[in-house]
Amino acid sequence: TDLAVTQDLASKMAQKDPCEGNPNISVTTYTSPDGKTAKIYKNTAYDKSWFTNFLNAAVLWHCWVFVQGYVLLYIAWLILPRWISIPFLVLYFVNMAISKAPESGGRLMPLCRLDYNMQIPSGYFQMRTLVEDSVKLDGNSQYMFGLHPHGAHCLGTQAFHLAPSNPLYLLFPRVLEKTHMTCASVMFFLPWVREVLMWYGWIVVSRKNLEKHLAKGSNLGIIVGGEAESILSENGKDKVVLEGRKGFVSLAVRYGVDLVPTYTFHLNETFTFNLNLLAAPRQWIQKNLKVCLPVLWGRWGTPVPHPAPLLVAVGAPVAVPRREQPGGEVDEAVVDRIHAQYMDALSKLFESYKGAAGYGAERKLEVLRAPEADRVHKKTKKES
Picture 1 (cartoon, rainbow, N blue to C red):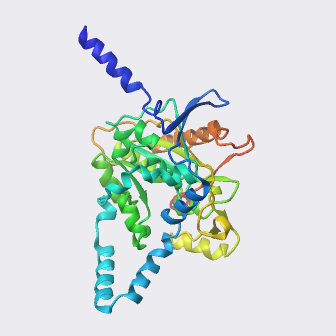
Picture 2 (picture 1 turned 120 degrees about the vertical axis):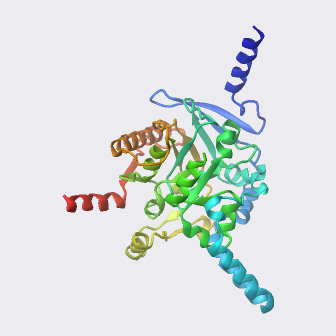
Picture 3 (picture 1 turned 90 degrees about the vertical axis):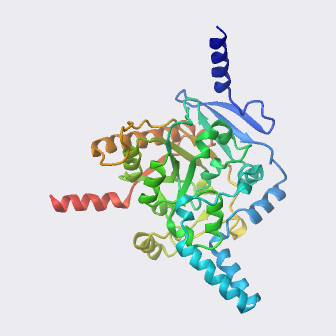
């Protein structure tokens, strides 16, 4: 019948890869040693000269934002009349203290959706996105993306830009449209950093805030390793703080949200790290104040990152049981089972596609135990 033909045509159109045939995106097929297949996407529109890409990285990318916000405010204090600078600074810091935008993600700027936002990841880092053939993300479902590793900056989040030429956006537009990246609240107390994050729709990673967004149907991107993983970043090694870190899994189980593992290869090559300098005080600050102060530098000793060839691999979702009534208590046995499945899925994702990133067979993923896991173990042992 005509209806059956129409439905069949619609089904075939829905299955067609929107990136194939796009003049600005190259698509290649990769088969892993264990027989899995995936497609690797690369935005080629910004394959410009090295010098052009370097200038874009130096000027546009937020490699200096941790200090430049305060520097800009200090310059404003020096050059502006006091009758302007004092009210401006007072209003700015009052807004920083009381604004709810970091919780809602409500300052998404239209300019941040332009194709030009792919200039730095696609041009300077030559970023590619690998998507397993088994990855089928439904715009009507909810997902929690696990982003690994943290590195100095979790640059894998750039694969989630809402830009028209971003391959992942072309593949799953409805999924990315309702996805918020998340980070620690301290980032929203850094001038200019907070503005950039809010323009891109980032939100605070507090449990209460995550539950609010999950309850209203949002997808989330969680940098699972956090500051505990960032401070351990080391050149030539791949480490994730994941064993015993179950908070994100508990949230996913509570709201029936599938977990999608992702891994960014070569992320720890974007900066040169020194793990030994002031190691003890930095670890104390990280452990007690939850603030990471890595010792690192980029190209020529500057804050500009090395142009490492990033490959963001997206694995198949780890299924989480749906709940008739989201929220409420969860079965810890289910959390443990899903957490084990997620760790296994991430390890397999790394092993299957490290060759596509140019890694040798000897390169292994180190799964480290989270600090809170030991605290819970000691507390349980003490109570027993």
